[in-house]
Length: 148
Image 1 (cartoon, one colour):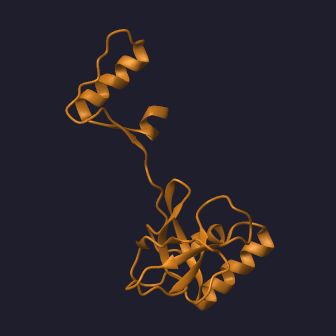
Image 2: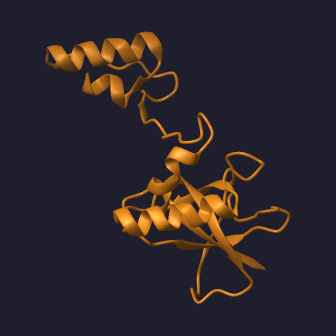
């Protein structure tokens, strides 16, 4: 079994990586942009290194690729590490400018009523009624739209 050191897209400190196990059949290499579990969320990360052993007893699996090809070569990984150390930012943040267009995506949160259930608008204030009407009409609402 192999293990991947992954620089994650989360506020974790300037030189911190996390260890994930590489599932059998996943041809992972340093420089790959991957999806990984991080607490209750699934986020992106960049594989910085592969090892055959881990000092972590329990690791979670890499979920898969964002792109099948590596997004950073060895020079890009070294540059991201240098930027991270010099500017005291995470390795992922340091590498963002080197990602291909559309490389960094953020998951969106949606709110919806249970399938087949209509949101009842009795005893709601004006804002709650508008949100419920929107959900009834469109099926869901994004958190971004709620904030607006």
